Image (cartoon, rainbow, N blue to C red; front, side, top):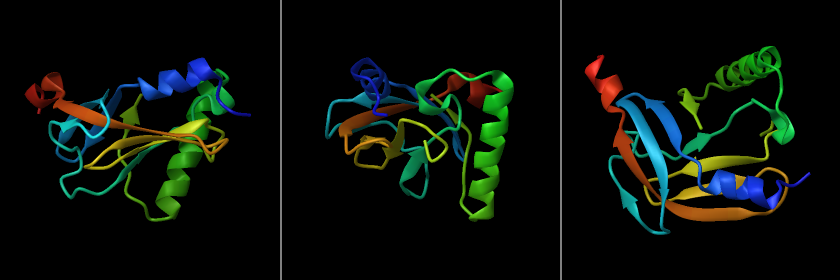
Length: 131
């Protein structure tokens, strides 16, 4: 089932909070081909933002979301992939985010839809103070 038009615009306008090795960053959408701020991964690798919460766009109970997230984390670890917590799939989500030094893409998990934007990032000042 494809994401509803209103749901897709929510993905496009979503703000992500990423807990990267260099600190916590807020990443916001920006006009295409525009990037400002520090890229969260110091090595410049592409970042894939996905969640196991609320599969298929349906709100799930907290316990079900926690179990699904635990399964996702176990699968990432089983595959030997690096991962960091983020807030903002396989596992039933409608879309994933792909963040690169050049752009931010929202990729449908249920169809061929892809939207490309730029991004801007800023450090989470409160997190840097507490370190």
